[in-house]
Amino acid sequence: MEVEVDDKDLKAAGAELLTDGRRGLRIHGWEIESRNNSILNSSSSQQWEQKLQTSHLPEMVFGDSCLVLKHIGSGTKIHFNAFDALAAWKQEGLPPVEVPAAAKWKFRR
Image 1 (cartoon, helix red, strand yellow):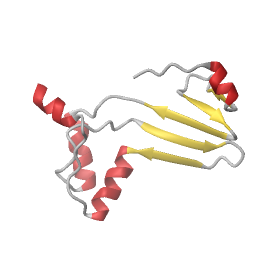
Image 2 (tube, helix red, strand yellow):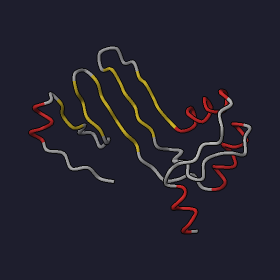
Image 3 (cartoon, rainbow, N blue to C red):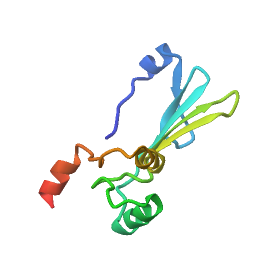
Image 4 (cartoon, rainbow, N blue to C red):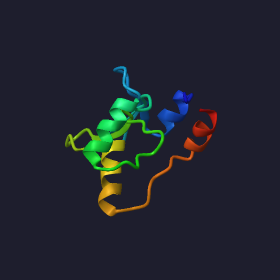
């Protein structure tokens, strides 16, 4: 999904788009970057299941997608990604996760 951004709105908020090919923006001393990639293939999904010691991965896992928040002054990064989220889910012993879009995807198969 592409989002159109008005440069005037960005400037009014004190933000600017990243200009080095990355998808995101720079605002108030932070870089906010998103990386959107495809759903894991079956081989990668099986590898994740082995690493996470589970057979209950969601039907759709966007394994290479992430959100990165970086504080420019200190270089501190906060990195959100599917593997770490699923590892935390597994550690908490929560019920199986289902992505809302998975129901539509399963129906189309």
